[in-house]
Length: 449
Image (cartoon, rainbow, N blue to C red; front, side, top):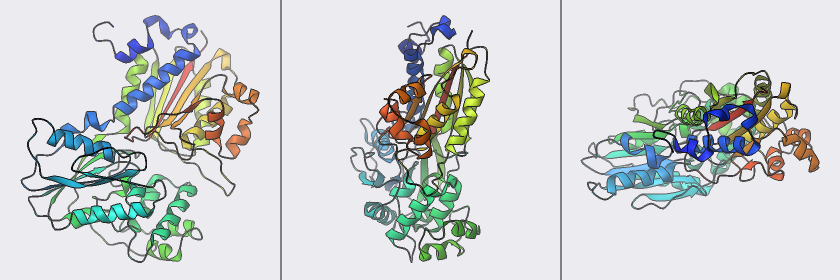
């Protein structure tokens, strides 16, 4: 490796000549895409990025609470920084909760696991334990809140008048609604006894510091895990339109709470929020890998939303209109999949995007253009895709699928994109990554020379 050369470049065996179209084999294209995804995930690894954001050690106790797919990894990073060799002693305790499979071994901080994306009894139990842990603290104490995507489900404490079954029903309705994440979180906060700043209110007069990993377009901290330490920005908002949209799919008790004004907690001091990782930084880490491979990068943004299949078609059209040098279309954000009553198969927003992209490309090469793509959720789990983080698309995706007896059109119509890519060996399987900076989409376009 030459001095200053990236290890990603060394691993891929890239040289300045490898920007040429005739140097792009299927193996090399796939290796580059996976290397970029790995770089994006690494840029949001709490073990690497959390420590510099820690506040001063408190004079009193430090109660660590947290929820989300990165909660376990963040808790371990806190323990390593404050209880590791040579570190000053801190009176550390607390509880964090992550989805099943995302827990990690911890020392003084209790690790819980609960269900995602629909809460279960463990979600409620963990929320009650966390709420109880911050009560009775004094002004010299610190509440360190570790928040990441996936926290809304695993930290689920029904508001007065609601049951866990009511909350489960609401979550299922939201997942099938096609609503954007901001609207979903407005509903979740209104129906919760811990979200929307209620955890911070319970911790007073202790100081509250929130370390968060963003999985939200625009990095709105109040929307990440529905903001348990941040006053609800929608407290004064009339949620009747959302309640009416969901009516029939939720209980009357939940409907009644949604149309009722919320408790205004703006008088509660918002926690000191420190964003330790965010989607744009992860995309920029991936862009470095692409540029070192001789690929031009078009950064399309970290906040792209909309229907997954529609975005896939739009991205295909954009790719086929490119000419000149190899180019990467790089984007993040959170798309949606709207279920319209039919029985859905195994799929998620990233596999649905990938299948729609492949179909729009049509297996054809516009003027000899070849396209590879990777779409994946950086947490390692893409909806109900069957254990996949997303999928990889290649120029021969449709041909291989049809040779295997699959109908891409039927798979897309039935929201069965996860099964489709699994059958042809192109479901992206990473396992839990213990972080979450939302979706990662990389479309590699190799125009004909």
